[in-house]
Image (spheres, rainbow, N blue to C red):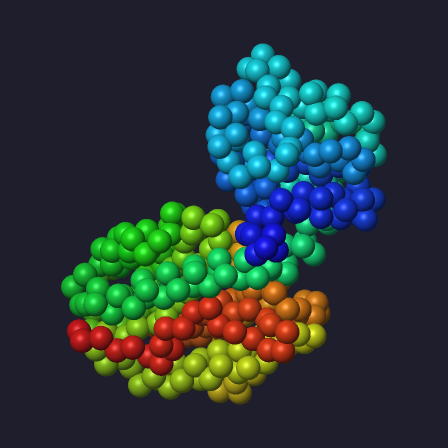
Length: 370
Ligand code: ZN
Ligand code: ZN
Ligand code: ZN
């Protein structure tokens, strides 16, 4: 059954094997997605050092501030048989790690380690070459296990339930911010433990892909891009966009929305193992370019998702990496002519012989009464 666990106890050893294969002497993981991936521990990001050390040639150990020891013991990390090493306020945890490791020539640092810690690690381990931990972790994290895909499926279903309520909240006279507040509440009510982002982009704001919310009042004839996501108790993320219209949108909008709908479908249909990531981007771009909206599709087609909202693989021109079973990523083409805009986004998973979607709400334009 171990392979059905989200955070299997065997993972520390799998990572240690990758550390050796990459020729690194140790991996140093501070709080964030890398640490959580290896241990399940959702540790707080603090100026006080928490660090999982995975040496190539000795057992892994977890260094924690004394006042975080109880939290570490209560976390999934305590079930992994790791030595927990608390440090007191007057101690230097960097020197403690250096003393334990002995001489090292190279370390892999969590990709999102704070510069504060990177530089202190460099001082404590002078001469050790510092590389990104993703050198060792990327191949593991990029292909999701059955349990991880199940966690992403639960996240997708939760955000679909939020989108199902959005048409009831969109009406002329409300502000983007008011609708955004209702959505944020619902993201938590539907099972997430954290709201990652809420984009309610109406009218001309819809032409700005990362607009969040504003005090703009929704009006009849608006297209509204709603892109929302959060973190589930599992640590895995949701991310889904639907575009809605309030009353009758402009003719040209209806025309390019259909182009976008076709583009998102074409990209989805192109996913299978072995196909380069950039080909999915090309599949989405082709119908949009053919319809004359190429310059209005101003971002990549998608990004990987898991313990982070944006991670490898990126679905973008120039990324020739072949897709493989277990890769989870977004397909989110958009068209942003200026007066308005539209995007459709689903999370999908590459399977042994094709693809499945983890978001299943309607993709045809939903028009609500003004
Ligand atoms: Zn985005
Ligand atoms: Zn999104
Ligand atoms: Zn996205």
